[in-house]
Amino acid sequence: MNILQLKVSISGIDISYQNEEKGYASKSIIHPSAIVHPNAVLGEGVSIGPFCSISSSAKLGNGCQLYPGSHIFGNTDLGDNCMLMTGAVVGDDYPGCTVIGSNNIIGYHAVVGVKCQDLKYKPEDECFLEVGHNNDIREHTSIHRSSKSTDTTVVGNGNLIMGACHIAHDCKIGNNNIFANNTLLAGHVEVEDYVHTAGATVIHQFCHLGSFSFLGGGSVVSQDVPKYMMVAGDRAELRGLNLVGLTRRGFSIEEIRNLKTAYRKIFMCTDTTIGSFEERIAQVEQHEGLIHVPAVRAMLQSIRDSFAEDRRGICKYGCWNGS
Image 1 (cartoon, rainbow, N blue to C red):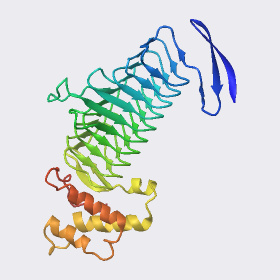
Image 2 (image 1 turned 90 degrees about the vertical axis):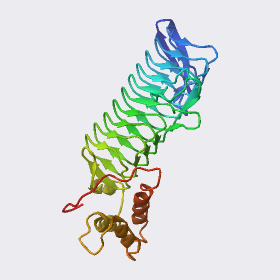
Image 3 (image 1 turned 45 degrees about the vertical axis):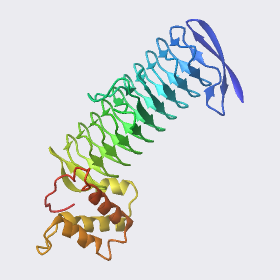
Image 4 (image 1 turned 90 degrees about the horizontal axis):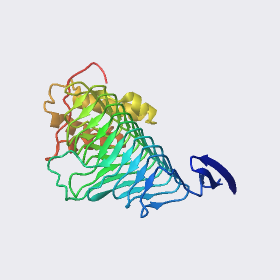
């Protein structure tokens, strides 16, 4: 069902039809002060506010909204129902492209899909950024394209990236993560799913953050954080399991109990006959009651992967009274 709508603007009255099934007006509304290249491709129901600009290679999906003073540069593909707040900049005129999925919010003065800050980048090289769906990218955040044509900066789905965060070139971000204000990711960082960082967290290049991990506020993370674990400090050290996060994400009491047992055997072992770190992991891998638990197996694999040749090892650990 279409409902006729009248909208008054500086230029007079704009007439559009509101499509209740699609949730947006079928006619695009472009403010007269906006600069839209005639070759740009606009979907249905696009709203472009005052003093916006859209490049010749840009493609906007249905129902996108550009608030005043937001800009789309270069070869940029914006999915359906995306919203650019005032001052947001998406894309760059360098070779390559920026692809943004559907239902994303780009916050005030955020900069997404621009040239990286890697001195090895050559301006003639293609560089890429891919962002999934349903992300909330808040004010003053910066997300950069890749540093080379053979790689891509990737942000998955359903992430909350709070104000003034930075995601550098070639990072790989999974789904449903929460980055609190001023979280800074250097190049080539990989973040799995449901990771939560507190404010002012810094992650060294090439680090991996495992799923369901938690990084305490002000942490400086220079090595990998395995799945399910919590770190804090400068330099960040393991502080036990992310029990609150695991509980919130629906892990059962039995799963958490098994993870705690495995964690203690590896990182808080009181058996003096089992000396090395490798021996403690091997003991858990041979434990009949633990190795058949999928979450425990995933944690063990995450730890072992961190010691591969091209990885940085895990954050330091010590002995505490509990996890």
